[in-house]
Amino acid sequence: MTMNVKNLICIESHNKRELHRAGWIIVDSSTVIENGFIEIENGFIRDVHKRTPKEKSIDHGPGVLIPPLVNAHLHLELSALNGSLPFDKGFKLWVKMLLEKREALGKEKLIKKAQNSVQDLIKSGNLYVGDISTLGITKSIIEDSALNGICFHEFLGSDILPTFIQKNDSVSFSVAGHAPHTTSPQLLKVLKKRSKSEGLPFSIHMAESDDESEFINERKGQWADFLTSRGIDWSSWDIGSKTPIAYVNDMGLLDPLTIVIHLLTVNDKDIEILARSKTKVCVCPRSNQNLHGKLPDIEKMITVGIQPALGTDSLASCDSLNVFDEMIFVKKQYPGLDPATIFSMGTINGARALGIEQLTGTLSKGKRAQFLYRSVKAVNKKDLFQRIISNE
Ligand SMILES: [Zn+2]
Image 1 (cartoon, rainbow, N blue to C red):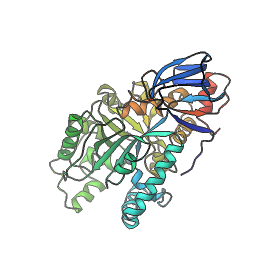
Image 2 (image 1 turned 90 degrees about the vertical axis):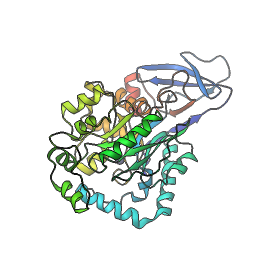
Image 3 (image 1 turned 135 degrees about the vertical axis):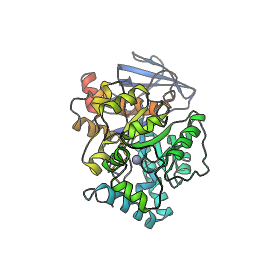
Image 4 (image 1 turned 30 degrees about the vertical axis):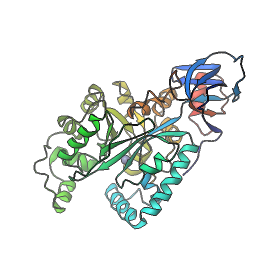
């Protein structure tokens, strides 16, 4: 895993009372304090002040205190596939090779590399995750680590297996459907119902490939042939003359407790459906660039009021799980986006997508006393966001 971000310290306090001072504090992208301190009480932020503390405090220096990063979509169990799959031979071959190599590696290797990735995430300040696992091997790794967030057990095909769903303070357990063209509508509806009944988010990859869109819109194509060749009867699926987003919307899957991932093949109407239903959106631009040579229309999403979160996908399609790297890539690829907006994508938008915004995402009153210190030297607020989203 590349560790592009230097000069980073992760701070977590469970103490009764503590004051943390720095040259800058980013409470959220529109609340930036110069020369202030964070007041901690019993492991939570009691207040943030714009002045020099009079009591004894921990002085971090002239740099900036920021909330921890949220990687809202990753697959830790694929970490062992880092750098072993070709990106330039098409998406179908990539998926085929992924499944073969994952099988050949064996569970022990997959677990070991997932553990290494967890340590890298913690070191790089990515303390919150939305992890997708089909094998079910990453739950305990995350639970035993300093990471927080949601473990999604992902299903595909049509078999409804026993699932464990539970809402907790640090790590919650929910379910995900793989994608609308790989998972039967009956199974998708059951998974959504189960996660919703516990008040937990449901995750699904959406509108990623042309094969997916062609199958759902035209009821034919290579994906239709593939399913038929595998003996899968999709004749009752309510597809045809619609986009993947319209299809899952008709099924009743879109609401504020659903996170849709990717959105590469969407039209304006799809984006309006997502905005109106307040569905959460997570984009993974580096993975999209590697696998599909195209990027999601983030600007359009923001125009209609969607607040996209950032994910990295897995190390099988991206060279790090670090959201700092993802933000740097977004800044380069979308020069029209304000760096403060990109900063929100990597923090509060991710927290909202995972339904944990009461715990983290900003440094405001009542949130957990967890933050990062970056030793950047900024001349003003605008410069500050520019420098945070850089390799400094
Ligand atoms: Zn994914």
